[in-house]
Image (cartoon, rainbow, N blue to C red; front, side, top):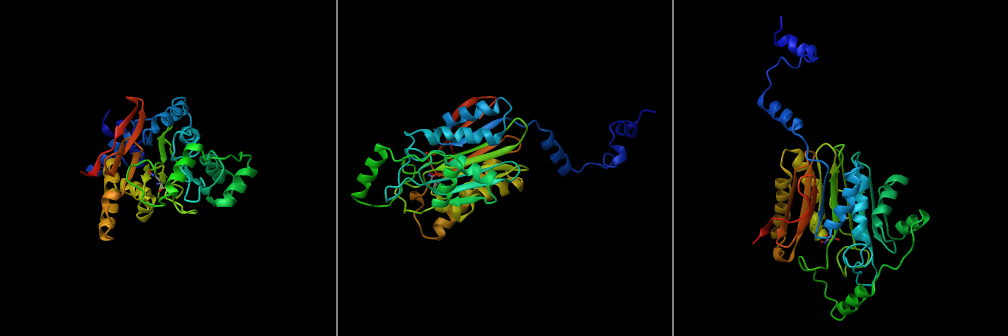
Length: 332
Ligand code: SD4
């Protein structure tokens, strides 16, 4: 007789003793979300230069390449562009006139690599990847990072362009360190991607805050602050005042909020709220601070949120192609 039990047995479920139990609504929801077709591949990156970076990443993703390769190839475009004065070559220097770079990378297995305060190397993200793949460590800084890069065959180059040097000399006239929200003395490219196989990876790279103290390290090379990936849950990256992102271990928080069931959008909002609360608690002026988060989850859903208007991000997916989106913000 053909009954439900026989049908389930034909699927190999009844013998596992699973299928005959009534599903409660939570289990049903979980099953539904697992069955939901993930929107993939998808890549998301910070700021308008993310459009060009996404295009490079998409070449990898659309040919079934790995998210890890996509994010590295993507952010390298921004690192190499001297017109982008906040990342890599052409980045604004610190107050001593030195271009010092921060970057990190994380893959779907939890492998991580990072460099901080690295000078003279155009592609710190690739050095971060080499730290991840070729050393027993996860982070190298300053001279040690440079020595390692040179030993790996990276070329030593002057990264201070005439334009950035001119700006620094102008800045020296007042020497006032007063980074303004959204004014181009701080930007970073953070990129997160979900590939066709459903794996997540991310990369983050910057020259950091312009005219920072020599040796200052921001959030961008710190796993859990500027970038975090958990292949079971989602990925997030950050831009803006790094000190504020570090204070709440921002991207780890965003990913953990997604783990608790929050959408990427809600998770970004809650992390920004956390910064707002601490800023007020510390009696600091919120209007001077900008932080933006972007996030994706395993289903390819995305979200973004920032403190004040002016932050945008680039999104490339299979439905709408590559586009720039203004992030929603808190302060009106
Ligand atoms: C830093 N978070 O060094 C970086 C800078 C940045 O938009 O992203 N600015 O603090």
